[in-house]
Image (cartoon, rainbow, N blue to C red; front, side, top):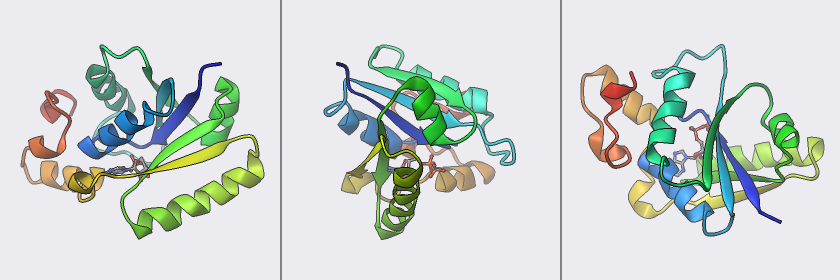
Length: 156
Ligand code: ADP
């Protein structure tokens, strides 16, 4: 049976750090679904549709990666898709505490789902979507922090 994981997040925008988690995840899983959580309250930098389009452009030639937008709780979406693994990335102890809290809740509510946390490679630990949003708000092109060949201006 194929092993599939859901990599959920806001991805506003998807960064080199996120890409490193997908790349590592593909060494463990046969397929990864990158799930952009559509949160109606948060109007971010990119629309949900453009967040999805950006990630699809990165993985256009990789059939092991599917990119979707989903609404509601991540665990419910996993059940809907019959996915039993949640993939997340961890940069530091702040991420660790947050991820552990989510994992414990998910373990109670969705005992069939296993959370897999991967360490961020050191060259990407300082990269965050919020840093990119800040740079863009000041008119700076965050090209060094974005996956190769991705120009954020095409998605704003
Ligand atoms: P969320 O709002 O769900 O935290 P994000 O899009 O910020 O969504 O992050 C999605 C996942 O990617 C989280 O597990 C987060 O810890 C991880 N992540 C964020 N930035 C990086 C990075 N630079 N390197 C590796 N993982 C990261």
